[in-house]
Length: 327
Image (cartoon, rainbow, N blue to C red; front, side, top):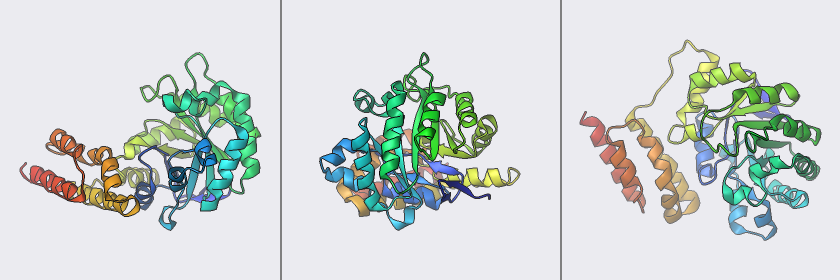
């Protein structure tokens, strides 16, 4: 496989794990990198919270040796505060600093951060400029198509970010108004890729190896970002890598038992990092992806919403296996 780099940082493959709040913690990043993700990012970290010495925000930036290369994603709307956040992030020795200009969540965008920044392209440039000045590692940016259909400005914002010193740009092919509803506009990603000279990472509904290949063809991007499609399915990274290397080679799909074993390992690692109580609360929404396509999946998902200790998860695994063996 060809070598791919961002600002001199070499990626392990051309498929990047998206930063996802409440999902892409240390345990998840380690898991996905072990399955072939070429790069990962932390959950988004509030620059303002860091300025108030938030312990939780500091913990979000912890990076283990098993999850590199790894970038730390920060968000906010004040250039100097964002620069200070980057300086704090650098204490964890990330390979990259990523700026969130794409989060559509109201609690982020209504405060002027995330995707709301795209309504002020000049401010986007100022933030990138200050973060680049404060950082000794490459700075990347994640944007959307625009705020809404009347303000599609991904190309403009991307060019401003490049001029301000960004080393790569990820483009999610939806507006903030769309959130995660279809369709994804891959043409706008192509336009951004044609407008800048730095790497552009295509993002949005890449949920299979075949879809990954089509997105590369449609956008011309060499790098892809996968997010929600990896939930309960870290195999998507190895499948995409395999398909891009040799589309004639049959793809590997795990058995139900293998999926459940990986699920257990994933949540056990979360317990190790966060403690059992917190890990199991967060695991309730994570384990449901592992049941997708299994017999009795609806009942298993319902039971997953009540797990409170690791023994509950072990019992859930055995029920899932019994249901599979019964057919």
